[in-house]
Length: 371
Ligand SMILES: [Zn+2]
Ligand SMILES: [Zn+2]
Image (cartoon, rainbow, N blue to C red; front, side, top):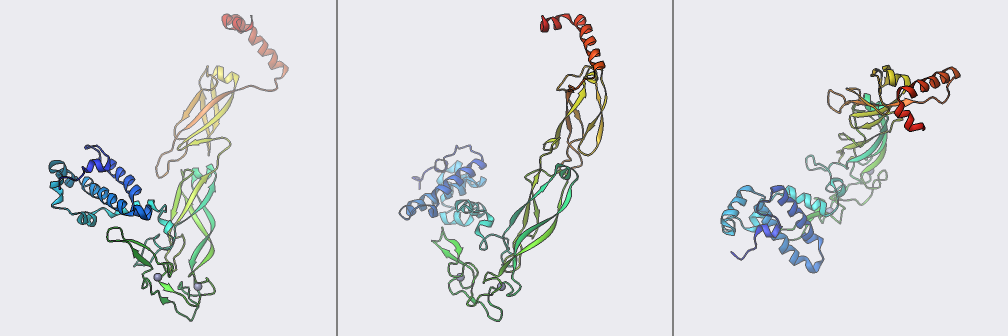
């Protein structure tokens, strides 16, 4: 079998490609040539291509097989691994990933069919997401807030069966209660939700009036959610088993997406905080100690003499707490020299005297400006 194409060529990778790159190349090609993604007329050739790609990947992604292939070529491989063996042994974790992305759905996308984690064969309900808006102060200290959200819960009236109380659902004749049907050939067989029963495995003749046969009802729920200090905007907090319930009463997870509001005085960049402080001109010249505002307290800040406008001071540990860490970021304070709008005449006189003295003292500077 020496007329076979080189595995590296098939995947379009270099002979010294890293495993991660091989995986990437495989995913791209597998998506492109997946038989379920092409028209009926191209199915046969896509299947052939897909087989070759998968075979090349199965060998090159396995360090031992790859070494063997590098040394002996196809001879080193063929006698030991038929395509079918390769398929049996292939990494189906990857394969499932690819199928998921191929059909454009995340874990929840399969809905009641494939989404959740099973427990004893039963499916968990969908994961859901809700939002919580908090202030920067709340992100600083951490907080606990109550949220209200709607959630699908198992219908109590029918116990989730969807059948009118007093009646019974019967086992679906098409899928025999499995809820899924298998389609396709040996290699490309795929399970799909049963079209007859919609994946429930049961046929309901008389629907439960409380849930219209779905086995689920929507309910408003209040829930206290703990938000850790240092939380960043965009963080998703997982609350276990507070998502939708399946008709079997097994709940998916709730994800609470945190939005931290902007603050009028502080700008945040992860653990660092940025703020500005105005200081009087004489303090900038002579130096002094001023009170600066950190987020939860005032801090004594020393201004050295001859402090220029725009100087940035770093106050270590006065920034935001780091999530799940025992330390905090820093606070950066930019000094802005305050220019008063109103000046009493006595102060005005002093400033004019100041100018006269400085004109003598710093002649070239003043000359450049005024003459
Ligand atoms: Zn019901
Ligand atoms: Zn069925």
